[in-house]
Image (cartoon, rainbow over all chains, first blue to last red; front, side, top):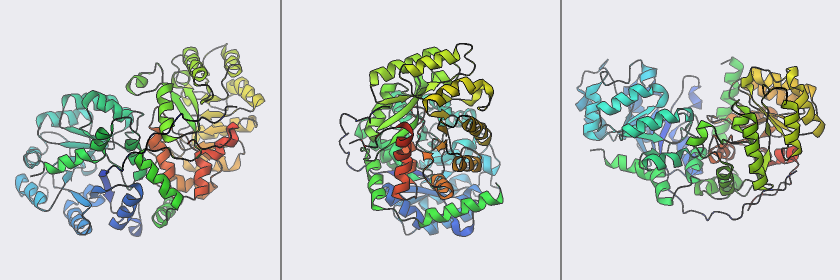
Length: 263
Length: 289
């Protein structure tokens, strides 16, 4: 039987990188008891343990077709935590709100929104250029990013929206490693697409591969809390075999840049 | 989800919120965030080289790439099979490629022969030849349409049984685990490892690992949810759960991060990361430095 494997030398410790998380959901899922739902206090504790400095946060009420209540809860819950910013919800087809899209987006920006989270699959609409063009245009005008889980659409629709609204910044979360070929193709033709790292998007060397093809400016750290733990996502970036400045872009720099673009 | 499963998950949620990290866990989480050698004995029972496979052209699936990541993390050892040997691409070419790799790597890689049950009449002789020439276990895959307890596996499993070698098997849910348990009953000197705990039917993984001395389960799961490892430890303890990453298909760093983040005792974490595998693979549990 083999003797233990001894690496020839340890990698020198890196200075602490700042991690800025683009994928956190708090609040109760439909299969949880009310008192099990992760709170802001739970989130801050997890972030401290995993060495995550800042996070963009949304909540499950927005995914459950109740963006008004979801936004109210988010603003209330995050108000005392400068490390956290809200990714808010919107009505997509004015089903209960006929305010023009531009006004609604302006209001979100004034409230401090870091982005809009859409749930097309969960909320019964298509992620398509014809579905909500005013909303996409308004978000593009204000530089407000759109966040979405990969399972909420398909790559054909995603590609079409990105092409139709080239100024709209989209951050795709929870990409599956098996979809890498689709992701690479869409990223190649759509420079407005950004990809979150974990969870699911955990193919070996996938971050290095994205860098080789497109540079590291469109890869963004995301943990998937609280369905997933934060530390594995942190590790995936921390051990990436890229120069430190590129790792820093992925860990926080790219998301900071998107936030600075909101106007 | 059954009521029992819902209650079980609820207990895990409650537990994950109540956990207080030990100083050692905090230290490991800090090292993880800095990309440093972890300083625990870690043996990865589930890795792959991907030479030739199309996904291997997308990712760094070479044995060198695998070893580079292991060195950064400070793994003390890994057990590896060639993807193309188990996935029906080319049994001989893939196993031969891994054989060359393990000869180059010296003692750094423990190699499983990828056992293609549809390889044909030479399978038994070919597997025996690989076992004589540096391989020290077997890797099975379900996609052949042949259950693991089917008699067609008996001749190759008998070879592993006679040599008391381990056998890792891809499992995706209870059906696969049950047939692997059938093989474990037939070949008591083979320590079987059912892969991908929690992919589906967690109850079946836990029940068979708990009741069969020679059946273990591994942690490899690309979408392993928060609380899964805690749930397994709560239900069956930590001595039958093995760390497996599925690298180079997955990020080894991300996968080991799941074990380090788990809200379990330091002793349980050490068992999972490497001490259980050390017993199985006959390796001295010395942490890499």
